[in-house]
Amino acid sequence: MSGLPVEPRVPPAIPYKTSSSLHLKFEHPLISWHHQSYRAAANMPPPTMPPAMTRPTIRKLALAYALIAVLAFGPPFGLAQSQGTQHPPASSQAPQSQPAPPQPAQDQQQSGQPGFAISVTVPVVNVDVVVTDNDGNYLNNLKKENFRITEDGAPQTITNFGTTDAPITVVLLLEFSQLGYGWFLYNAVNWADVFLRQLKPNDWIALESFNMRSNVEVDFTHNPREVEQGLISLYFPPFHEANLFDALVDVTDRLQDVKGKKAVLVLASGIDTFSRLTLDKTIAKLKQTDVTIYCVGVAEQMFVQTLDNGGLTYLQAQNQLKSFAEMTGGRVWFPRFDGEIPGIMADVAGSLRNEYSLGYIPSSQKNDGKYRKIKVELVAPDGGPLTVLDQKGKKRKFQVYARQGYTAPTSTAAN
Image (cartoon, helix red, strand yellow):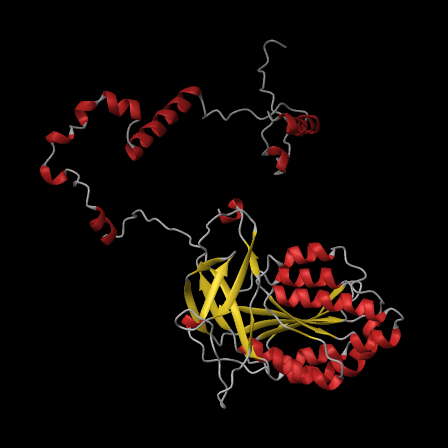
């Protein structure tokens, strides 16, 4: 057997499958089982490096790649420093190649280069004011010098003044509980048309109802007809409860980031039976809002007829609605007859259209988060009391509607 030529042993041909296991890095501990399973199936050692890829070849390729990298990106930092003769210092170069001296700040701004700017945020308190006489007529010809604002008793300088016809954002917040079922059934659609006809094409309006929970019946829209259809759908209240406090705070919170003139029109009994918030917490929340609240109490006739203790219950409800309106610069009505409601709706629309916009920078810049009381008065140009005369020369008494204060920001909020 030793004299016979020995043929090299050729392993049997095995199909070289292009599965993902052939392309995985076998040294990875999480995928080493692919290598083992493949060897068991093929019964052969793992493929070796092709003959052409010998060690000298690898060295040559490494040198070639290094040479290409040096030509493309320059020598390493240490090499460039050691071979200083290849890069002459700046003093030996031609003058035109030297970097230009720094430009003045004015030239840098003209060339579009970034400069430095100092910005200061100055807080401005905006107050919307409505002035009417005792007959409900609006006083529309007042000037800046006719207004005086004090904050915690300290006079303030009015920096912004004007009347604006900007679009308004209004939410109709309706109590839709069995407490007021009869009133809503027969009156809601009747008064709506009077108010909705006062809106302009750019105004936003939404409809929200509440009983034991709040529900958005119509989201913000420019189309008043959608609100009318939403009112028609309120035909049978499912619950006897009313969460007035929660619903009111929820609406004002969602309006907080809305810019411009904004208001909430509340039509409710004023009774709260199901809110998580107490009256004190509700008032504290409303002190932080810049939303004007108008309230129409509809409980007087209803409670007198249906509840044995209607007088006391109604008085408490009336005081609550009155507090919400007065502290935010709104107005409140308590109609005794259904025929009064259309006129009330016209008054609400008129108040939104006849506002004076006043602004001032508070003299106290403390960011202490405290409530600061605001008082708006009408004065003559000389600083004395303002006298308003009617066409017959008689003195006209007037009423000023403005929010009673605001909550100063805290240091964290200011930053």
